[in-house]
Image 1: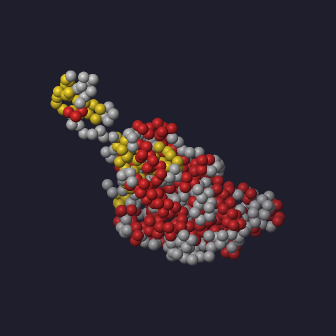
Image 2: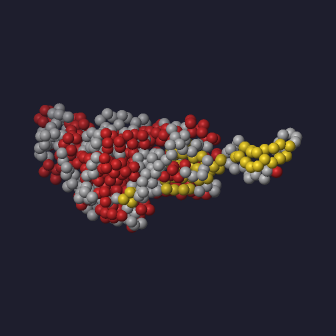
Image 3: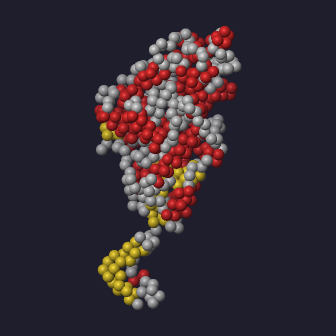
Length: 589
């Protein structure tokens, strides 16, 4: 039986052979004699796996962009809920992830999944260690597709890098390569004017060198339609979802209406917050003046939770600042937000340079300190029961909302390490568990500085808690919000209730030792500020907005960073912004 064919299509591989018509032999049963065709062997579909970790976004995502621009037929985005992340902290065995942190994480993963599906892709969610899940997935796909590689963003700290090494080892046996990208900082690691191992030990030196010579890369763009999932996994992806908190022994997260923001995880909420803060509420122009606030949504950007999980790219923030400057105003405040992003970078590069020293008791300096671990004092600090209202209010806010202002972080850290002389790692691990914006290098780096064991020329700095309270909460609005026992006590007495006489306690309906705790520590230097009178004009956000120089003497910084929060060396940097800041950075075209 003879037949003439001009083309042959293999539906299984969408492979088409075209050419001039030839007479081909077909058997009596109707089967084509393939030996006559001399066609290439059947080629399975190719797949690239994209492993998401702390890069839960589509915008400015180089890993995803490289994958969808490759020759692969399919791209499979994957997120692993690694049970190790929800175990115990390293030093003191605290629960590692609070209910609030877990909720923010799951919201972020679910939002990423939704956004990927909206572009023709999806996100496979599995529970397990990546070095186990990814090889198993590659083997599962082996019957219908060939996994050509695994793409992921490179991390900094030892645990995450250990996962990368283990994953690479497992995949090497399968002949699958790993491709890693650097994507967590404003300034790319390869654009630094020095190797990370030669990072300056003082932030100001780092900032000046970076500002004078570094390019800021443009954001990476993705096509509106992404490559599809491999068909063999599509049904599983459609059914996959984030695991319930109970699977890891985590309780459901509470909701407290007193929080500064109803933080919603995910890229969608992150971009909405940026647009609200910059353009709708027009708050960026006042950022430097208001950033040390305590009450309300807009005293600072509060981008840090989204930056920490990679829902928001620092480069995207930078370019939006530049857009704001072009459209509205360029001033000290617009520069200062970029200044904060550079602080975030600095801590990440400190993590690269110093490695695990960041987490050791003697810190970056290797300084031996005899830290105490008094359990009663620590638990009073952790639970907001120290009897020092400014400390208690901040710790209660943290427990209830997963957030604390930068000003609060500096004070509670100073109180723990300098007044109570407790091991700084106790505080760092509480912050690790509770903060929505926990990021290891920023959190532990800032605690190094607070404890006086970081590479800070003023390591013996100690905050006067009552002075800070009167500077930043002069009318007691903040402490009364979180310590309602003090509602009827006027300022300044609400900041130092241990000074109340029995008659005053009765007058203000607050019995010290019963309604509100006795102070576990009172520093003699506080007396100087216990009788300061608050300003008569206003309090709250309007008060902060009028204080253009607030915080300079105490070296504070604002809310645009991720995790931690005891900023250093700001006083000598106060003249770094404003005029001429367009010359400080170059945008790489």
